[in-house]
Length: 307
Image 1 (spheres, rainbow, N blue to C red):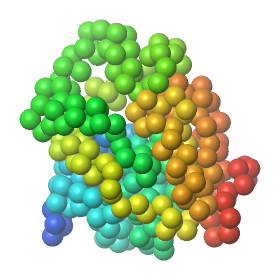
Image 2: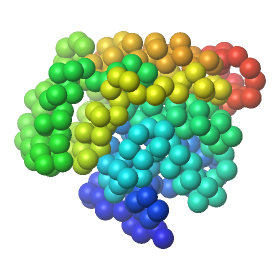
Image 3: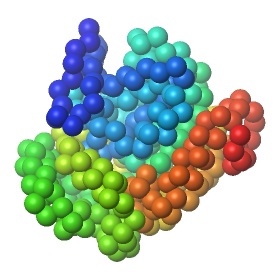
Image 4: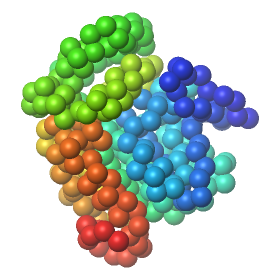
């Protein structure tokens, strides 16, 4: 049974399906084109959109689940990346989707995207990984300790209410403070790259985020010792990352490109984690569009050429 998911006024419409293991929230945007599954990162949910414009512009249908603990998706659906990957595959079957053109894994959604491709090769034709967590332990020990406190289910609501309050009253200062955690350089460099339109998008996104039980689960699942699925992926993969990403270090992208047998690594000129707002975003979108148009069945990696 599907019902409407809960969300803020800024959220896109979602639905919630009740499964034997719990509730799974998702957003389904049908179009004439093939399906792209988008697995967003920390503090995100199905009702929020980031980096999806390139797929809409090309006419792709979008299936965007809330990962475990985020939005209305229960942790019991599959707390570990491989378990939630299996849940997404089941969701595709329930929606009548027998193949997806790509699975796009963003930030902390990267490991689930990789697991989905590895465990369900007949479902997923290719991978797009943007600022994605790779096979390395994530995040660092200090961030892990702080994150367990600041973004625990008890405190995250107050933290995000304070964030919204600051963004409403002191947007420039609040953005600079928040972006400091997302870059290895100066927060001002990230701000300088944001056009007025993209500043508005960043403020709206950050004002709508919540952690629920999801971020603490990410911290538990994405540390050292977790199972790695990269070398079992047979599909081509496009790995996009910035060398100045302060949230997911560039080394994750390097490890992904080395571990995935058919991967191509593309450097973004973004000054931080948000590659979608970088000065070369049009080039990145063109590369994604070209990658999706390539033959996914041929051997070897992607040649990096459009068309």
